[in-house]
Image 1 (cartoon, rainbow, N blue to C red):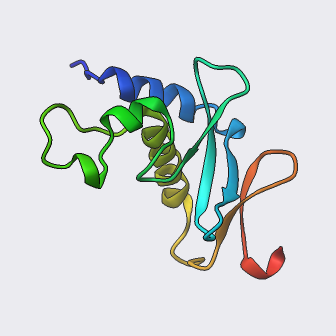
Image 2 (tube, helix red, strand yellow):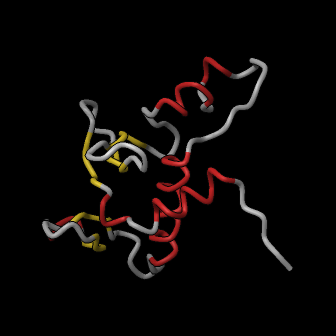
Length: 119
């Protein structure tokens, strides 16, 4: 049995496999954003949430309110998919006994589950 993965998901898996390059930050409104590296442009990161990305692919084809109902494909870009893959893996590791844990990026670039009062 073989599994067929579309090209965007395949690229998203490649991006998610190098999650140490993701940067967690906050927007002006306090929303958590992630800087996800570009695969084609060195030293470029796209600001990504689980629903939105500022890359050209998402602006052109993304699932956003202004495009709903228009003809053509509507889909998430590889950066949003990579972040969703990463966050779903981290959430799966969070134990029910510790619902208060928060994912934080350490100074060395790694991520760890920490209690809010610890930082």
